[in-house]
Length: 331
Image 1: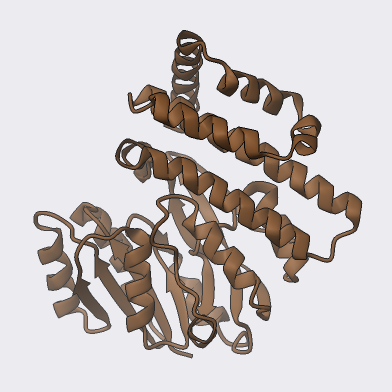
Image 2: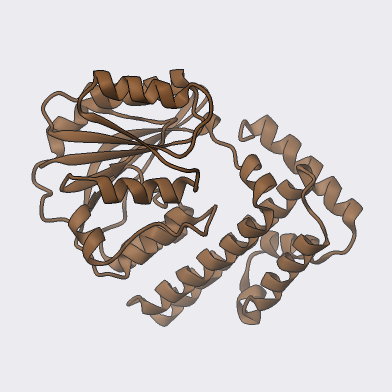
């Protein structure tokens, strides 16, 4: 089985890139290619990637005009020659020694889930333990905590992606990972789960603040787009009526949590304004009233804060949240 690693790159420091590339380069037995998609990086980064690919023949370097991570991943999908695709963020690494061991035996799957290790400073924890690989089980796991949303730690069958016209939504700047997986689920794939860690996800190298500063209004719209898609998928599932409602309530609580965090972050980086406030208000008003009534107390509190016109109070909550996240090591 030939595997295509796809690594989208944008302004990642060379020493971090080298850590990523070397983790892939250490694979010995597996037949693979590694496609590096440079999304218009500045400075020496392009030269570093070009040199690395020149000296490592299984690495292929392509440079394109900046269009975002979805655009870079889509370009990688088009150029991939492998039977399966495995996405790697340029600031993360793979767990090399497992790739030669387990890839055989899953050739009939359209998607193979694996587990990953979440790394935040000195703290490490395992993300995984799928509930099952039916449509209903995967969707339920996605709603539960979002830990399977990302495209990494998964083997995607390229032929299935092509036959169903599946690509990342290039109009989105957040939540595009979840939307890609949801669209994939709707195509009735054969899915399998390998209970093995294949990926190291480094939290400290990721921050959403730049994205929020640059695309504040799109970030708001993306939250609503993902929410609507998940509700559609819940409706298509084979859940009992009670469980279906519970999942919708849970996802509504998640939407409120994301909107609240986004508004507090926008206030913190000084991009919150009346236009943003109107967009938040519009989304909140469009949430089904019955679902809003059934969300938990914390969600109702967050809704109340977002609906409030007291800007000073919102600033206080934003400052408190920023300090809390810093103490927890999440910002």
